[in-house]
Structures are given as structure tokens and as C-alpha cells.
Length: 214
Image 1 (cartoon, one colour):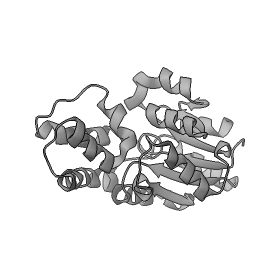
Image 2 (cartoon, one colour):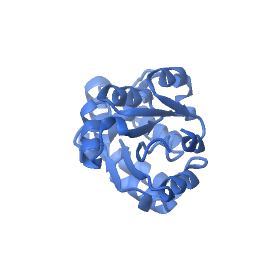
Image 3 (cartoon, one colour):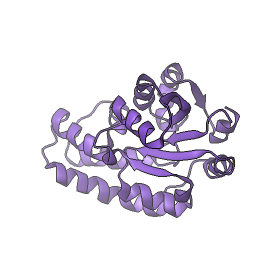
Image 4 (cartoon, helix red, strand yellow):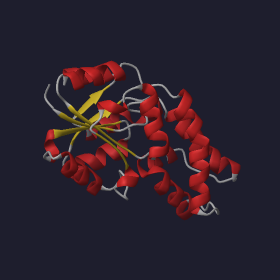
């Protein structure tokens, strides 16, 4: 095991939630007849709910109060995370093996605790993690290099001794720029960006169990 400290994204990395996440985020725009580009999900995934609400208002012209947008996001998403979204293939057994080997595991995600915690607890893996962080805890997004530096400081390890895993190109690129070791993760939602993710990351895994061989 090359690394002993891991920092995991949540949506599309630990859990198979991207179809539900995408549906929630696009539903709000569709209901308000807001046009958007094909790369919208790539742009908003690292931003979190608050950052996405701001993006919708400032860049797409969604004329709703930020609080109302956030309420819609949380309301539409909650049932999916609380009752239906599964862990991705081999995630649960891989996390257990890492934990049994003495690894220190953490989560850093754009999703809020309202959906993050309930999902991890339902799946029975919440207790595997020393820290479960939402971007909200740092008052910034995964598009900001500083969030990775702050997380590393809390973990108590040098940046290059922590392996960050994410399926999103922008998050992987930003984490590398901050000085963290990065492993890209395959997810169907980001398949068209696979080559880009491989180019900016130190490693790339298609199946979560591949992590045990790094």
C-alpha cells in the first residue's frame, strides 16, 4: 500500500449517484426554461449546492432567490440519497480492506451533509472515515486549490502523502495544482473526459478495487 491517507470524493466516486445528481440539477433549470450547455455538469459538479446556486443565478440567469434554489436541490435530492443510491461496485469491500490495513480515510465532497451523511450511514460505511467533509465546512468549493490545502492540514499529512480520488476532471486538475497526489476514477457520467482526467492525474482506476494495487 503506497499511501496511508486517502481523501475521497463522494458522488460518482464512492456512490453511484451521478444520474440522480444530474437529474436534480437539470430539473431545476428545465422547470424554469433555462438553457444550458452540454458541459454544464462538468462545470458545476465541483461547486457544491451553494456554488451551483450562485452559478445558476450569475451565469445562467435563473431568477430565483439563492435560498429557494438550495431548498429545491435538497428537497429533490434527499429521497434518492436516503433510500435508493447504492455504493459503486467494490467500494465497500475495498474501503474495508484499506481500513483493516491501517489506512486513514476521509471524504471531501461538494454535496451537503443533509444528503451525504444519511447516504453513507445507510450504506454502513460512515464509520470507516476519520472525517466526512462537505465543501460547506470549508466555505469554498473544490474548484479552489485552497480547499485541498486546508483538508491536508486537518488530516495532518503533507499534501503529496495524501491520495485524492475524484471522477471529475476539474476537481482532479485543481487538486494536482494544489500539490496533492490524485487518482482519477471512472464514472459513466464523465466518460467523455476520461482522457483529460488521465492526463492531469497521477493514477486512474476503472474499478474501485484497482486502488488496492496502486
